[in-house]
Length: 285
Image (cartoon, rainbow, N blue to C red; front, side, top):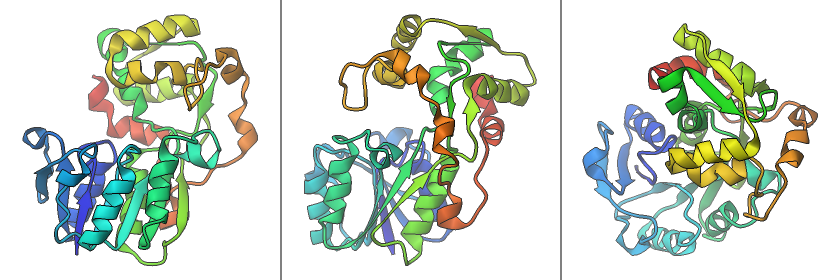
């Protein structure tokens, strides 16, 4: 068996790659920058999902598909012609909730219409987002600035998402299913900061700011924080339509009740945010 992992250096892809290698599976890891990839045991290849004709698919049986809606249909069709017989899509819980109607759905649909086995992994909010949003200010000042300290969600450890993907790639019986993978607990931003502080063994201040001030902070950070600022702070919805941040602050996620976790896929207990903070503590020092 050979598995193509796309997005192989991402938060999930790198752990999927490592898990496949540990399982003794031949792995082809696709990345735009092989020189910076640290993926022991994998065949590292250069490629970009926006150029599906250049993705090396020879000899590949199964594929872990990172979402790129602009080319998903072409890539999946090429993969099937090359012999791929199982596709696992890294999607989003926003599809389940009906919030995402334009980004991940085309990728899911490409897999569903492929004629081969398909499964969708739909993570909720990644705990790892906090590295981009809070990491710089925690490292520099031991402070977090956010407009909604008592707001929260069910942040998921990226290892749980990877474990779900690994089970679906390696085991039978998952065809035609979509698995939501969330963290096990509703935890406020204030308590998330507390968990990171406990992992560090140092105090971290929480400084409440307005949504507009937080947006400027995120924009100055660049990267993911800047790209996602409007959505994360409620200025736009998932489809980039204008929204009111006050509406997002008023929503009570506790009304949703417990959300599905990795246990529905693997049977394993999901990792808590506190465990994630301990696992990633060196990134906050």
